[in-house]
Length: 349
Image 1 (tube, one colour):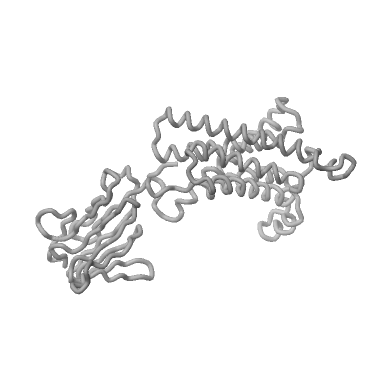
Image 2: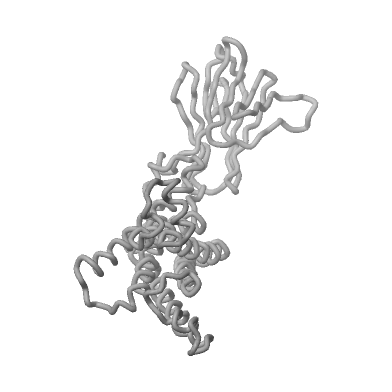
């Protein structure tokens, strides 16, 4: 998780999802190694499921917290403290939830019924009696990360965590031998055993729960990025200036060819007036372009053109909200200049 490797595109929202999915997959592999390869006797076979769920809770929670701290370049002591709190809470809440479900569900059933025998059978592969276990595992991850993030966005963490756990459980069920998995896998993926493989079912549980958790609970925030204005015209090509101030107050940057006081100077022969354009940002991190010249000033974006040339009959200049990648053309014909608005990591300074 490196902010320099995450460009400001819609795909950045998948970064945390893939990061947590990798952590969940790694936790599943570690538990499987202890159970099979090393033939461990640390726990009984009846505890295979709870141990796996607790390991997933630790890995997914730790990955979410550590990923955020990596992006924000948090101090090492703060990282270790937050990671310890998150993992500890995640494992503790998951263990408590799994125990409550495992001991509480049989109490609601008749001891002589087949449902009771199924509920207490740890080897049964059935979502009917295990759905609560996946839900509490996801809830534990959500609550643990919510506490570490000082109760920010409680709805996305709590309900996103539950949904992530249930999504992982659904993948586990589909890949473990259900009719749906058995019917679809030979024709869509050309792997006849995909729908009847407990090995892949565990992998799907770890990767699926981690991916959904990273996708639903915490995305890459905009406050890690700052706006820049870059020149695309041959004259002064590549010249760029930051829009954001060092503090959190708003700011306005001016573009033109007036010799003094402008933030970005462009030559008059390229169609730029003394005071042609300004880019502003407010305290809410909303960027906008304002046209200050009677000469052509157009914002170009996908399937849209915005004319910003100044209208003297209006009490204020035209303005439009900017998105990363928008291009602004000043002037017309051979005498024209072009600049681009970009969102880059703040550390680019």
